[in-house]
Image 1 (cartoon, helix red, strand yellow):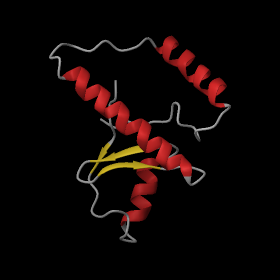
Image 2 (cartoon, one colour; image 1 turned 90 degrees about the vertical axis):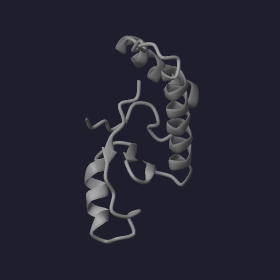
Image 3 (cartoon, helix red, strand yellow; image 1 turned 90 degrees about the horizontal axis):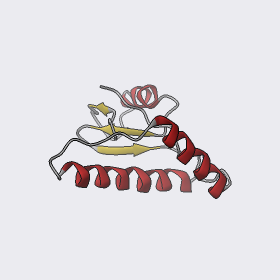
Length: 107
């Protein structure tokens, strides 16, 4: 289940004062949710942030659909998640720029 990082952003990173804070909040993670702006992704190559954004947006839509059922969600066992990450890396040959497993969550 997503436990999104939430951060108030003063701008879309266009303000020079805002850029270091965004970099600090993102840290070594791939995804960041900005409370008043939406999703932020990064990547090593130009396609990476697009792939990351697609995956994160799809995960958000899936979680919202599941939550709309009105029942408690069951978290997936961490061993199963680790196996999924390994399979993803094997199937994609490591492509996807770290898509699997680097989400920043701040409560």
